[in-house]
Length: 439
Ligand SMILES: Cc1cc2nc3c(=O)[nH]c(=O)nc-3n(C[C@H](O)[C@H](O)[C@H](O)COP(=O)(O)OP(=O)(O)OC[C@H]3O[C@@H](n4cnc5c(N)ncnc54)[C@H](O)[C@@H]3O)c2cc1C
Image 1 (tube, rainbow, N blue to C red):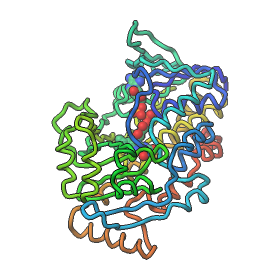
Image 2 (cartoon, protein in one colour; image 1 turned 90 degrees about the vertical axis):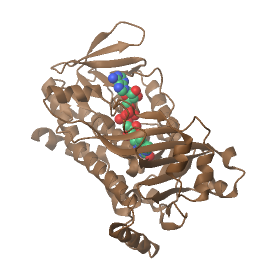
Image 3 (tube, protein in one colour; image 1 turned 90 degrees about the horizontal axis):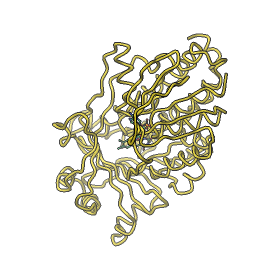
Image 4 (cartoon, helix red, strand yellow; image 1 turned 180 degrees about the vertical axis):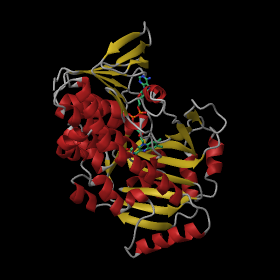
């Protein structure tokens, strides 16, 4: 394989940056990333840093900085939102020993920033900010991408391989589906999320709130069709809350709208029957700073690959956040792309296409299984009164005797084994020759 292959990546989100870094670490020398935004942006939100993500970040050389300010989670508590009464408590301390990395939580800017710092150290990587991909002009043998700098003329870029990590609203995916005559679309989940970050000093006056930010614990407060997940980040200087509720505010909005400034009174009313402690936290959000996200997914894609072009991350497997695996799966994609392209025997378009198909074989089934599982976990958490909820709560009751599965799937040991115990790079390395021969 010619390591001077021209690699073009669309999007400098978690998936795009991790892909650039994974390829640079494998010795590729010519990697261009095109990003619409003028910088990395600042999403005020936390993120769970699961061991399967940490393992890859460590190999890419950027885990240490993230770990330094992340919080090492020891337990998770699932509680009734209305009463704060505990339904289940799961000890997560075994994770570090079993999977080699702890389950940590951190600030998104720490994850994105460390990936970007890693990219900046690689001579091979150039990130072109303020430059949007307009579309693919040719799928191969050498793909051609048209890009539009914010203050300049549009131009085309020829690549040997084009990787589209342009997120849920991917223009490359939509164009690929059209070209392949596939009818698949972004889907409404009828769920939306508020993302809230409270500063330590805002909570310090309230002993109950101080206890929350000081604990090494993820809490999920659940109720019918709603929940709140919360944990401390940034060395416990910030308490991060992320909610899920029925989408009302976006339902009538144009489909391009994904985030909006929410109305604080509507947010408070949504969690009206949750306990007073939660209300005290929600009340701390300044008026005008309520940020609501529409949660969308995509109908299944028959393929992620077209010629020498492949989709990465949310562009091909957007997920509900209930398993906390969206970014982790984008980073797994990146790591596997690094393996398959470096193992590709030569740089002919035919071989590159086969290597990308190996990537798809290693990644697609797993990512799609986790998308399904995230949706199922959300359904179990959001149950209203009835037989299914009674059954779920029986499972929670058994947990107190340390028996059975955890209905909140990310905290279940068998699910953790599937997710954290899977080393996607090892799978790609070990299976490459056989898979390459089979596609
Ligand atoms: C409420 C919530 C909580 C979550 N919690 C977690 C969690 O705890 N753990 C976890 O692992 N995941 C979590 N996720 C999921 C995670 O945020 C996403 O899966 C992840 O960010 C996807 O990364 P990406 O790089 O594929 O896409 P994105 O992060 O969307 O990045 C795409 C990039 O492409 C750029 N772009 C788009 N179009 C173009 C274009 N035409 N030209 C150039 N650039 C373009 C965008 O500006 C953006 O920078 C959560 C998501 C939500 C909504």
